[in-house]
Image 1 (tube, rainbow, N blue to C red):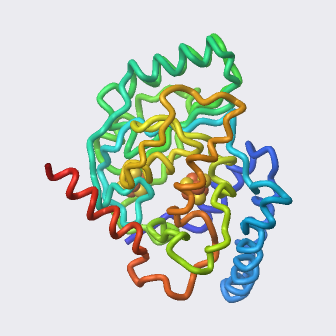
Image 2: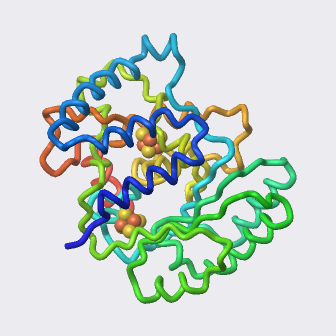
Image 3: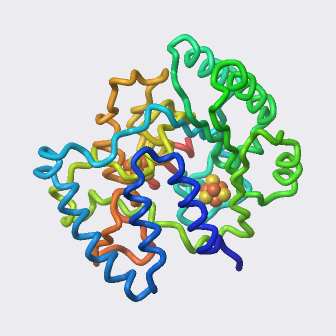
Length: 304
Ligand code: SF4
Ligand code: SF4
């Protein structure tokens, strides 16, 4: 098996830190990765404890949530169709696959709303699932390029692809030069570097004082999400809502004044990315009780 190398991961961190407004976390993460593995375990333990303190309700009340959602970066889950079923996929496509897409018309609506409301996008990333498998992928890319060229010439459009199937490889070749391709070059469904996404912090006593509006770096560093369920403070949250069925997605671009705390207080509570701190009682397969129940319910709902 061949996986994303640590070198590639480090490079990715550098790329991401380039468009973070407050790169403190990235400086920490890059220094952390430069440490030998044994020392890294110790620093992770110390940082995990610090995190538990930082996200506590009492500290959050004084300092405010640690990560505010982005107003300028957007990730679009174009389709949940994927050529792989990676274990621990943070869109749940390994255990709860679906073929839902965002239509070309919905993208045109996003563009229309962005123009009318003067939204200042700095970056839009297209992902999924595997975005190149969307039946209208090239037409969607074209619509976004036209929007960028006329209204936001500095906006970065990125396609995030697993680079896996022959169809994907053929589509990637058709993408124009002025679009960035982030090819994770996956070669199988085994991924060594995935965080235990299905490990809900809310299932552990260690997090009983946590304020989940604190989010993680993803909402700030990668941006808010447009998913088939609507707009969320991050695209992963939309995927969590698809399984847990709270129906919290916004139907149009959220106002800049909207912190979306009603979403993060419920959805970050279920997300394994919330904290580096891993409780000792974590199940071996990394799937905690809330997720086990949610997947059972999802399968019941989707059988009918
Ligand atoms: S390639 Fe990405 S979207 Fe597809 S199953 Fe793997 S992690 Fe999920
Ligand atoms: S913890 Fe999960 S749901 Fe919350 S911001 Fe991070 S990735 Fe999104």
